[in-house]
Length: 129
Image (tube, rainbow, N blue to C red; front, side):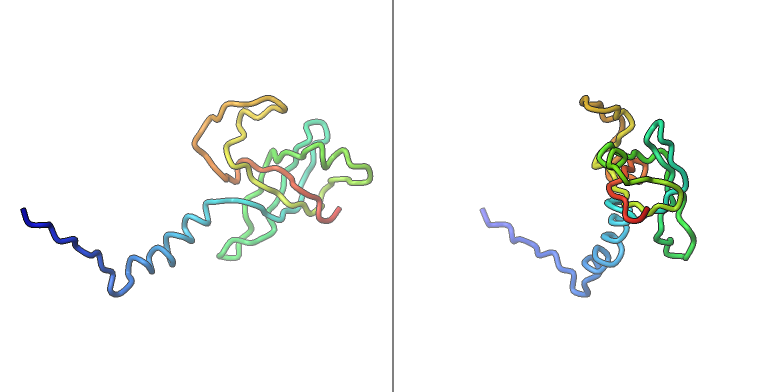
């Protein structure tokens, strides 16, 4: 029995490569949220959540939508002398998985397949009070 010849997959003009680098990678990267500088619009001291406005503008120059119910952890609000108030600048991070069922020190069930979403925001640091 004759051996079957292996066929080479060729992209002589780099069309596939350029599509992946120029289109696909930036599209995927735009959906993965890690950290974002934000300005505090309001802070609820009873629930330790705040509403923030992302500082970077969108690519068309418009402001981004405000993020609501952003968790402020005890490692920030319990520090003496640190006060989160309107116009404070904070660094916001985003959870690896959805935080819909997060309530505190217990394990919680993942509700969706959502990852690195802007909906799962948490204040990481206060940059400017």
